[in-house]
Image 1 (cartoon, helix red, strand yellow):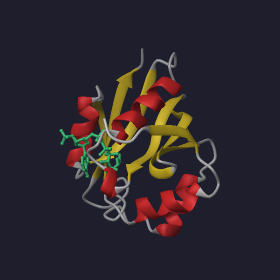
Image 2: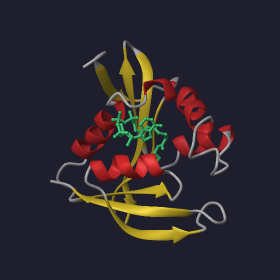
Image 3: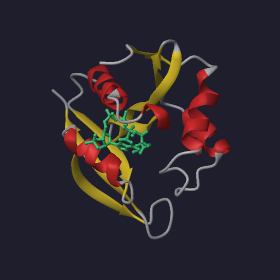
Amino acid sequence: MGTPIHIAAAEPEDLEWCARVMASSEPWITLRRDLEGCRATLVRPGTELFVARAQDLPAGFILVAPYGLAGSPYIACFAVAPEGRGQGIGSRLLRFAEEHFAGREHIFLLVSSFNDRAQRFYRQHGYELIGELKDYIVPGKSELILHKRLP
Ligand SMILES: CC(C)(COP(=O)(O)OP(=O)(O)OC[C@H]1O[C@@H](n2cnc3c(N)ncnc32)[C@H](O)[C@@H]1OP(=O)(O)O)[C@@H](O)C(=O)NCCC(=O)NCCS
């Protein structure tokens, strides 16, 4: 399937690329996370950033917090560049994160109530809705709490 994808810990020079992908994409546009806010998110204490590369160029990233929610792994931020979406790169990144936390039993994430495609993506990967944070980031929108039991 297409170009080989290689996933590894982010290099310092990847940060700006990741922040720009976030800031120019939904759901962060609706969530009003500007470029400065995206840069700050990506260097939050207690997180690890991994980047997927195709032919040495960044194609997507996943930011994880090993003890981010109730002491369990939490996916804090996750995106593929718009031109690379729908080609399996997101699935590879998500599987990478799940394997990174193999043996930790639980993994959590938040998805916005208006982000229908991401909700479907997570459902296809075995994530279940366990709660809703109403008006959590912007008024009138919820953040849905999703959970998956890790093998
Ligand atoms: C969600 C996302 C990371 C998935 O990565 P991806 O590489 O597109 O995913 P894959 O190719 O492995 O899987 C495709 C599935 O992703 C979902 N998807 C979500 N948003 C999508 C988008 N903008 N374009 C294409 N597929 C999208 C679809 O459910 C699609 O399934 P389908 O083929 O049955 O329609 C990526 O689409 C993205 O960056 N979206 C915008 C940012 C976002 O919503 N991040 C999640 C925040 S919680």
